[in-house]
Image 1 (spheres, rainbow, N blue to C red):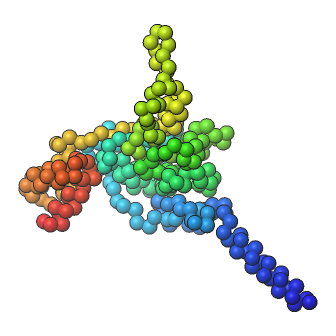
Image 2: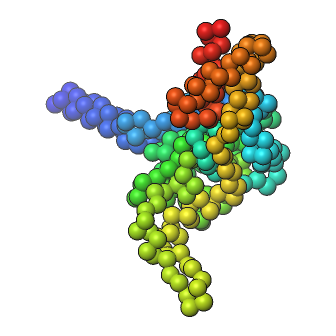
Image 3: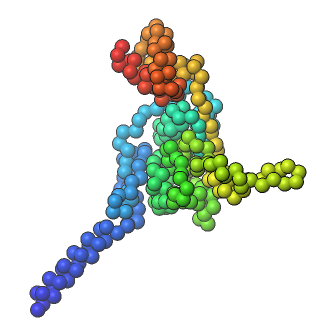
Length: 289
């Protein structure tokens, strides 16, 4: 009888252990924060969230980014203030695709990592876990940029409300060692429809007031303290970026000048004169040369 009881207890303990293993667990801090300067938050199918080190961060010197000097100055200044413990803003980088938004953030990470800057990349689908991530790093001496790339939301997505709360609006005080940097091709992060314009109201003196639908859609982007806009490159700017990348791949000045017509055809075929297209052309041309 005792053996049967002990066996039953053992089976029950095994069952409890299996159940606990699949239940959501509190986010655990990495055992070694010095393992990397960049981390990626991942939520497993079991519901467990983990911070995984990014062992090989793509190198991107600030000097390698051309034709975005105004944007670079704003982002670098804000990041430097943050690292130095001075007041700094959450940042929303918006505009044309392939113009260097995410590359600029990586470049700032590389420049200020020796001073304690770290980055945590969070996918849009995992933004509901932002409070847990902030709690884990709140007492660390490093400065953390929580980075979400290519951010936009559809109607009703849960991450939208979570991000609004973290940016400004939660009863909890903001954490001085955490900032949110996000990139997006969409200025207001939510889809805008023609029917939304019907909610505008007009006063007798002709003044226009946005309705609740419009107010809701712009409220998230307004909570970012710093907006930085990126614009499509002109032909001359595109060719300057091509020349920069070709030079970085060791192509001499004569070959760079000769590559200009090919670079323009490359951009025409892709329907874009972006920095990304310039980089892709330079890799192809340098590889063939």
